[in-house]
Every structure is written in C-alpha cells, then in structure tokens.
Image (cartoon, rainbow, N blue to C red; front, top):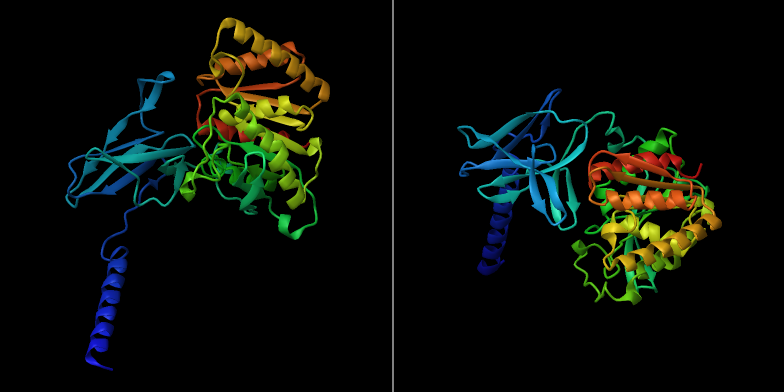
Length: 402
C-alpha cells in the first residue's frame, strides 16, 4: 500500500472513531434527564440549558387566559416559569392534571422548542408537539391494547381529483390471519389536518384496538383519507400540491364525490369488507364533519351510520344575505327529507358547548328534529379540541354496526 492510500485509510478511521465517539457522547457521560416524570400526584418537567436566562412551559395543563382570536375571545394556555439549578438544569413540578392527553412545549429565551427528553410527540399539521399522557379511566383506551391492529399507508388513484393519493387504513387484530369480512368506518379529519391526523392526535388505532379487545365495538376497518383535495399526501412527504380554487363552485363537492367514487370502491376491491350501506359508516370532525354532512346528503342511503362532529349547518358556515341563508335552509330541508326516505340506522351529532361551531350544530339538531330524522345530539363541555374528538370516537364507535 502506497503512502497516499495509507494516509487515506488512517484519516477515514480517525473520522469514523471521532463520529462514533460523538454519537456515544449523546448517551454517555451525563445522567439521563427524565421529562416528563409522572408521579402519583405530581408531574415534573426538566430542560437542560445552562446558558439560558429564561425557560417557560406552555401546554394544555397550564392555566388559561382570555385572548382575542379570529374566532372571538377564547381561553388559551398561559406559560409557567421553570427554575434553574447549579448545573443549568431547569425544572418545574406541577400537580398531576386530570387524565387526558396533553401537548406542551418549552420557551427558551423567547424561542419555542419541544421537550428533547420526551420521545412521545404528535404532529398537528405543520407543528410537532411534545405529549403528556396522564393515565386514568378517561384515557385508558389511548394506551396500547394487548391485541393490536395494523395501520397501513395506502396509495390509490383518484380519477375524480386526478391525483394519486395516500390514505391510512386501519385493519383490526386478526384481519391478516382470518377470512372474515369486515364493516368499514370512513373517518375524516378537520381543516389543517391530513391523513395522519386521526391516528396521531386522535389515537384512533389505540381507541379501536381497546374497544374491540374489550368486546365493546365490532371489529372494523377504519379508513382515514386526506381531506385536502389539492394534496397527494401530508405535506411532510414534500409532494407538490395541485392548483385548486376552493371558491370555484365546480370544485365544491369534488372531494366529497371522490369519497364515494374513488375511496370506497378502492377499499371494497382491495380489502375484505361487507360492501353494503349497513356496513358503511362515515364520521368526521370540523371540516370533516362538513364533508360527512355533504356526502350523506348528496348520496342518501349510501352510509347507514352518520356521525358529524363539531360541525353543523347555517350560521358561521355560510356567508351571504338573509335570503341566501333562507334558500339554503330550504334546500337542506329537502335534502334531509330525502335522507330520511332513503333510510339510515344511526345519526350521531356531537359538539362541545363552548365550541365556536356550537350554534351551527344546534341548527343541525333542530333541522334533524323538524324533518323527523331520529338522531342523538351528544353535547360535551369544552370547545373545538382533540380532547373532545377522542371522546366522541370512544362514544360512537361502540354503537356502529350493531
């Protein structure tokens, strides 16, 4: 070996050893920092920042303050100060919050960062947030079950939208080893979300796994599509979005049509399902609640189980004059009567009593009552939040396909 090759080998080995030593230094040489550390009555958060002058924490468990937002005055979380020790470790110990899934972040000298010592994170659209999951009766279905189903990332062609698109498909425990055919829940996300929203923030797989394992819900497939008609998939994949004018009347129901014309046929062709209305359910939150309402009115009799969440009709959903509103409500009355005539098995409407869309949900409740559609109006405390939407899935899933 000549001197140049020998030098190259030595430099390569030196770089490798330095890199390896740097990797090991991430794990060795300092005490592990536990954050969050959940005790019986308290929870402690820690953040190592020796040079920082201020570290604060903000989350779903911190006190709220009133702030003006685009949706009016709302309660938003405030921040709490952490205390620094002689080693530069900041910490705060708080009373253990009520059982719930909370998100939180730190603010270090004015910069918002996640908890580097917490591997439990969720993605909310374009934001990643650290998670605190407090155990208890309310949250028992948010933890992993013993018998777990699978979550598939599935690509399908959508001729209606002229895109190759991705959706998440949950198959229950035992699907791959049985010959059984299953009913299907089509579960739709809200504005700002994508096909990952219900599985990440909604804990849909864990909730369904637990309900099925306990015998509380029928084993079912759950399809979670991307409700943004200009996207092939979540923007984390860095795929280009198509041009799409939401104001163009020609585009108004394109995604809704794609559910019935593209998504349902793909599922019924490629999965073992019972392909009839009695074994199809559709549910969605916020924007997905609007998609749920529109799909079932445009295609009455296609889904026997209908569950709009945190959404309604009239009110804030539409602009225009009073005459326009009146005409729209007359059209709704005609459509809901057609839905009643087509038949269904369950209509489950849910909303929080401080949700900014609560009035529109009440309008929908009245429309269903006035047109003689038997339904449930499930009202909870709280607003337009995932804490409510997880409760709603826990509540209506056991009622499906019975």
